[in-house]
Amino acid sequence: MKESGSLIDTAYAYLRNQIIHGEIMPGTMLSENDLALQLGMSRTPVRIAISRLESAGIVQSLKKRGVLVKEVSYQESAELAEIMLAMQLYASTIIEQEGFRELAQLRGHYEQQLEATQNGDYITYIQAAMDFGYCLISSVRSKSMLQSLETVQSKIQLIAIMNFRMTPLEPHFSATPLNGSILEALEKKDYGELRNVLLSTSARIRQNRSFY
Image (tube, rainbow, N blue to C red; front, top):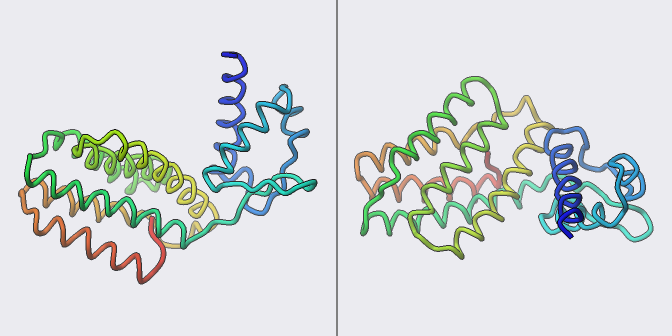
């Protein structure tokens, strides 16, 4: 049972990394048989790994045709970003009431994000941006919210990196100035400004239907 789980994780990690690093592009049709042969395992762990990717909205199983790597949905990316912003807005209310003990940790995530932005390292940038958001929202101390956040962030990360690979000449790294403004407001304990930053960002996303 442990071996089967390990094979599933191996197949999932391989497919996920191939997709988000642009080795397998949207629109590609995958075959369970070919993937199983390529990975040296049976079809069962490959099928389960594909099911996990399908749950994340990354691929779609087409009966008798194979598995389609889905096109990037800019609208879904924007909607997911709005969900994360709503969680951050709620967290800001809790922080104002109870304080925020993770400021140093949050600053560390931002510094890593800023450095990655300056170096054009998008993968490190998006991971640091997700870590920043998770650190902020974890102040709510809600296990259910954090579980939901992990699902949302996983989708955001995949879509964002796929979008970056497909549109390298378009402007990216937009979460860096946002998180810088969030950090500055928290350092000043200016919770009104913090809410203004989050609400104005949400309004801009709703208008443009894109982010990250």
